[in-house]
Length: 309
Image 1 (tube, rainbow, N blue to C red):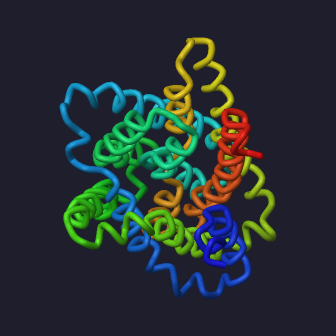
Image 2: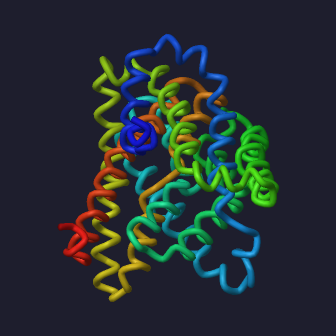
């Protein structure tokens, strides 16, 4: 039973199903989404030390690649598809928030699982996180215009969700609590995302259960920007003769956004409809993570056939 409660796939699927079944509770849990997200980011960042960002010349390259892949490539694909397919302005704003969101924290653990270039993924992800303080408000402002919520308000939200959690994580690293956090980090992060995803899905349950003319185009954008880009980047990486660890890192950086962040911000600052893209992408990421895990298991069995017996 304990093993199931620590299983990421079970938690993400359970979050989605719970949101559909208990949509009434989502109204009450709505105000908790932002604190839950801040908690997730704080716990996730405890695995990093400020020392890993030194010397500065060693982190410039992975940060540049993270920006190019996660913001320019992935962001552009999301925005182009959303512009062509989204039927309402609120849904368009929701995808602007997804495109403007920082890289997903899941990039780091999945780099480790898939035996990718962990240093590049860690440095690139958190470097992009810090730069998102400038990039995210700018992108939202450019693509939503004056009628949208002021970028200064969004900036204050990002400070609370990125800078504050990072500094708190460094304090926790130096405390005795870090021993407990290190043991339960994955479980705490997964259940933190459970609250965010189940709440957002619950608030938009009508979309998932009835409003298929919205669900279908939103899912198309999610599937193409996730699975389509993963295949394309891997193919290009092989053509350029990149080594496998580096290629894996680039695939993850170019396909995973912090969709829960986008959903939570859309819910808090715009409308329930604006949180739909982030919620739907979160659901698609659940499938993506399952397939990535299966890929890792298959590769592990091929590399170590005796252990698989």
